[in-house]
Image (cartoon, rainbow, N blue to C red):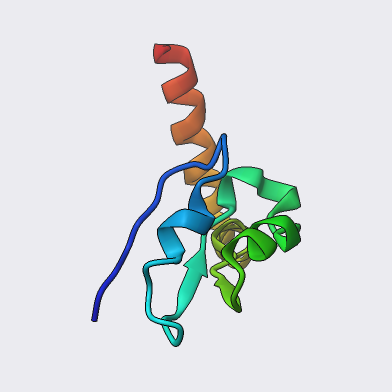
Length: 86
């Protein structure tokens, strides 16, 4: 299995990177930095030019926080401590 990991696409170059992949290669996308706009990946999919699987990491993170209130509280406390240190 070959994995190709690309960084943020400020000036999209993803179409060039994936052009060297085999036609049947699976392409997963991570748009977690977009947070609430995470599912808005149509432009990215068009650049890739093949079916993709958005890993929906931000949505999964929200599900974790929603499902475990104690952990969510600890996460908020941790973020507050980090913000204070900054």
